[in-house]
Length: 219
Ligand code: C5P
Image (cartoon, rainbow, N blue to C red):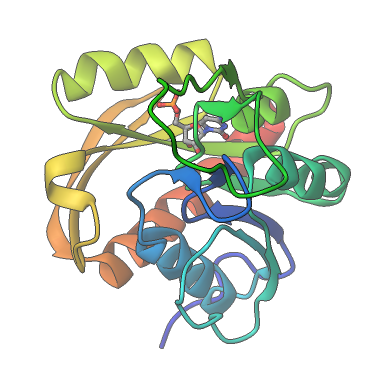
């Protein structure tokens, strides 16, 4: 028996990679399967939440009971997330958002020739930071995939983006795999969740969020 830890809560989740267009057939993306975000959406729905899943390109099936909105670029993702923030209690940002988009993108397929082609990259908006820094923000959960100095970079990211909870993992362990191993970072410190299937990690994360959320609300 799974207690309904998030009964009636409205949860907005971003998952998967964004795709930044170069031309009609090419683009820049991140390595992200979307598995962790989809597992969290499923665990939140199991826990009684009303879940909206904003998903980048991934062939994964929509978890039962979740509303899914597909997006391509970071700017598309922001445009879907922004108007929904006021109507959510929790925002869980699992998406691997591309840091840059292509300024000089072409409507047509770029033809190859002997010249050097230069792509101009401009920074994308930080979706999570903009949600977390808004007036009356939802309870925001961020992810940090690092290849080194996990604890130090993770805590710095949590402070910079003003997050009550950050989930840190090593890219080497997480990417594309069915298992994950994460460290939860919050105001009480660090809690390690040992290596386990992403669905187990997702359920434990939802349990942790359900414990923190009422306390955070009272602050
Ligand atoms: O700064 P960094 O990209 O490492 O932060 C990762 C966290 O921020 C993740 O939760 C990710 O979903 C979110 N993010 C975002 N928009 C961006 C970049 C990252 O929402 N442009």
